[in-house]
Image (tube, rainbow, N blue to C red; front, side, top):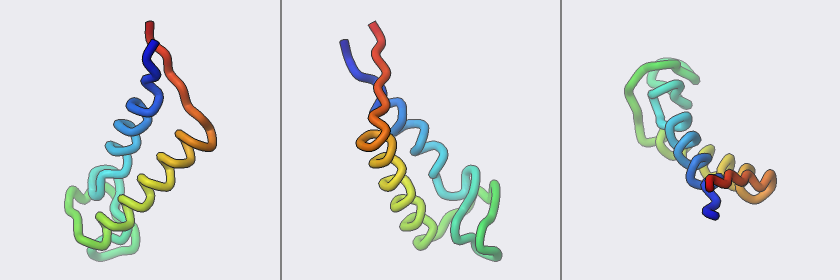
Length: 69
């Protein structure tokens, strides 16, 4: 059986932490902007650090596993 947990969590977190899709931290005009569909260098850096932190939390600390047979 294959463990699809890491793949599923990576895809979900990638979509959630795409800068400008749901939220952008830091925004262009405000600290947090929602649904702006724009991005910047600092936003990419912050969102990549958030992605790394959450993927480490879910894969190593919580140990999410999803088996499909």
